[in-house]
Structure formats: C-alpha cells, structure tokens
Image (cartoon, rainbow over all chains, first blue to last red; front, side, top):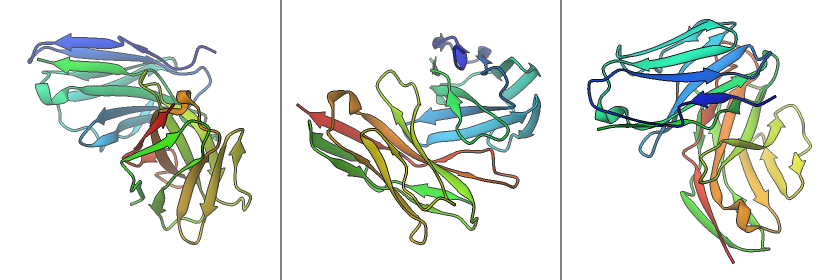
Length: 113
Length: 117
C-alpha cells in the first residue's frame, strides 16, 4: 500500500481565496482524521470520520472550514475564505477500526499571504 | 479530557550515546494506547513505538525502548546508540481504548532532538 496520500504538498494562496486539501486514506481503514500543526498550538485534531461519516468536528476552528468524505477513499478539507492565520501544515491520517496506530500522510504546507 | 505533557522542548545527544525523552499524561481511563511518533525535517509523522496500557512489559523496537510507569502516568522513550538520522521532533501521543474519544490521538507539544556528531 502506498500509505496515506495528500495533495498538494505545498499550497500558497492569497487571502480570501478558497483552498481545498485532498486526502486518500489507506485502503481498508475505517477512520480518517484531519490535523493541523502550528508552532504555537502543536498538533490539533480538526475533525474525524468513521465509515465516511463525520463523528467529531469540534476542532474545526470556524465555519470557514469544512470537510467531506464522499467515499471510503477520498476526503477533502476546504477553507473558504482563507486567512493568513490559517497558514499551517495540515495532516491527514487514517487508522483501522480495531487498530491503534494512525498512519499519517506527508502533510500539506499551506501559506496564506 | 486527556492531556499529554512533554516537559523537554529540546534535547541533544552525542552520536552513539543514549538519550531519554520524557512524557507524562493524564487520563481517567484504565485501557489505552501510548505512542511515540518521530517527525524529521521532511515532516512525515512516523510511528516509532507503541505501548498498550494493559501490558506490563515495556515495548522495544530495535534501538528504541520505553519505560512505561502506569501508576505514575509516565511514558519515556529511550534511544540507544543514537544516530544522526534520529535527529527529529518526537511526539508522545495517547489514545483511549474505548469510548467516544477512542479513535482520537492526543499529542504532546513535542521534543526536538539534536544528534551531535
């Protein structure tokens, strides 16, 4: 398996623009997570899905953030409109239902100017 | 709510020496998992080692081992024979075994490890 795949690896956008981050989890994993990493706050869980259904989105900072998982092999995290304070590394991770480890993608470094 | 604390923002070790990274956590659960993840400059999060709380035996993975003290809620990582490739951020993480939060990972703030040639 290729592991968790995220795209793009880097994204630079202007304030006010819409940004869409993409994730393909490991095949067979029932759980998918979106994390955000910043120097100030470390790794924060934004939202997670179980069997494509959002379970806990309490970490989503604002209504500008939305996440979807239309099928078991694809998820998106969208920011609209983007702001400079959204600049961070965004990780997608997946895990088995009965497993313990979460496997991470390589992250998307987002810069909003 | 569970919390994970890493009290050492930065550590350094001489190549070939041994270093121990500290982690403490707070939980009311009796069954849970603990992990150490490594994040090199490439920013990939790599699982180093995991420990199930119900196991008394400390986990080991080659040069990496843990000292798990359940009563003290302590979970330290020992790296033996340190290599230049061990230089990275190391994150301690917690995950409950069951319940509403059982599929979330709670991370510490990380420890930046430097390896001196």
